[in-house]
Image (tube, rainbow, N blue to C red; front, side, top):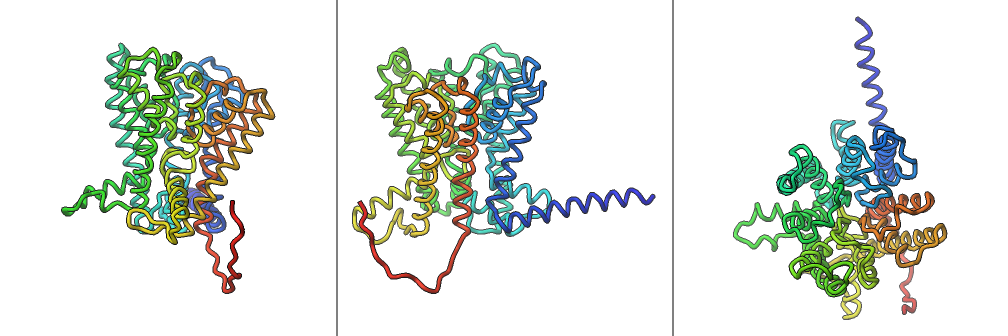
Length: 470
């Protein structure tokens, strides 16, 4: 009769120690907690993909391939070294899908959920972490916001599944197969993961509006960011006779405006570059070319689900895609890159400096200097990672700069578009891209969190002097 209480006390003590350890790590370094959680998930997915049951052949996957695909799934990238549909067994594909779902929720939000599960509450530090990831200013809303993020993602993925499953049924697939393909592709689309579990790929859907429209809309919603989604939903609920967009926050207005401008400009420019390319848009009908351009307009945001052969695109299209992938999608979204809000702040700072304005303003609001410094820091860190990754890849391979730079930026920005070189890379190259995917998904975000939470007050300020710039 004495042992059951002893087991209860032992389990309670273990939970208490785990809670204390998480709280201690979170207090000392919030970014470290997020990185540890994310790295732990990658390790678990890698271990599961290394099992013989994870491959269709029943043989263990090489460690480099298991690690690469695990990182790609958890970082919702989509770069792969093996064909997802044929190499992995149903068990392996389920493991990838779970990794995609967890990774799509976001590092900081995931850290908050872990803290909630262990301690039965979200403490102040965890609320600060989630507030940084979801860009929420009122800490009391974070618990509700985390739940809203999970519910919103499940609802959107369910809608995408409901739209895609009938399309697969019309292709002669059985109900279980169509349902599995619909669920997998819905999660891959919304989470901007770029994974495809269709044996026939998605190239055949290049002119299919039924498939491509959900692809475009799902990618855009996932890439715009949860703060924007929730802000738009809140403004629609509380209109009170006013136009909904007048109630949007500055972050929402900047993200929506920048995203739409980049999407339209991309569709027009890529369409112009590839319109007569016999290896991409050339053989297509006019309406199919327009649809392909629309798909390509959202792909660089972080989708990676291309309906044309990216490796056959013209170099001008590659270069433009490089720049767009580096920018990425919205903050606290399933997209990567330095984020469209960061890009918008940098553009506003340049415009203000060119006009000689004292303040940086947008939509009737002033952007603080600390936000500009943070944007510069994130952009510089991203460029540094891309530069270092490109040099490392050139050192371990004999590939040309154009394809290497494209693959490196795609990995850093967790996009998943590829010119086709990834499967043939040496193991060292796969490890480099794996590190870029991990750092691209966590590095700029955790750096932004660390810098945003770091405040120094100095009594003495040095004399002001301007060095010569330019």
